[in-house]
Image 1 (tube, rainbow, N blue to C red):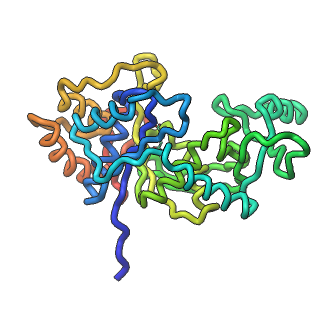
Image 2: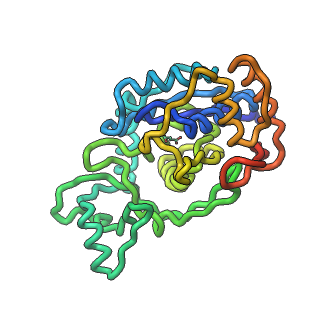
Length: 308
Ligand code: GLU
């Protein structure tokens, strides 16, 4: 009989500040999903984008998670220690002709689109028009990009079937940035594989990155995890909570109430408990028993994962 790969999930915060109510939803969902599957739950500190990292925020996050009873099964992995693995992956891609150096500035990209009589912005980012695909033509190298020609079909356990034409919607994307830093897409794909992650559970704001990550997994011959993107918590202004719009850090004076608020976003029922650990012990079967898939658009009547 074929052995099923044991479930391994992760929470991968960027240490750009303390966790807030929105990030706790993703942490809790990934922890519950791992436990409901009898799996392991790992923590990865995504500190590659050093200018955005806040010193000490990683320790604060670990403490916040611990106060809520969310303890990782293995020591955390810091992406800042993983440069060798990223460099190896990048040279594999360069050697295979799947990645190429790029000398374009933002101005160059805008000019290339203007010359074609159109501008292709996408969520504030420009679709890369492929200018350096055939060589730098004398320009100094700035970034390294992946040749991304795929239309990717993937399944999200909550959002259902997804499709993205990566070349049309994003273009060849950056693996190593012009400032020399590793791009999130490369780091996340290399580390999910290195940590043996079978299930990615994270906030819906990241769903749009999934097709790019799948293209990269395919290029590197790495396995594709299952994906579940959780509902976002929105502030009073309707925007998603983020560390950038300086939302209040989690209230840890009453961890049960804090967990309960995160659980409500995930459609879990109210649970009575006197400590975070007791609350979590009740939440695991509640998560596993949900039958209706979570719907889009925030809290209220949403179920847990129904796809295993
Ligand atoms: N580091 C990312 C964040 O804090 C999460 C990345 C991921 O889960 O893939 O938003």
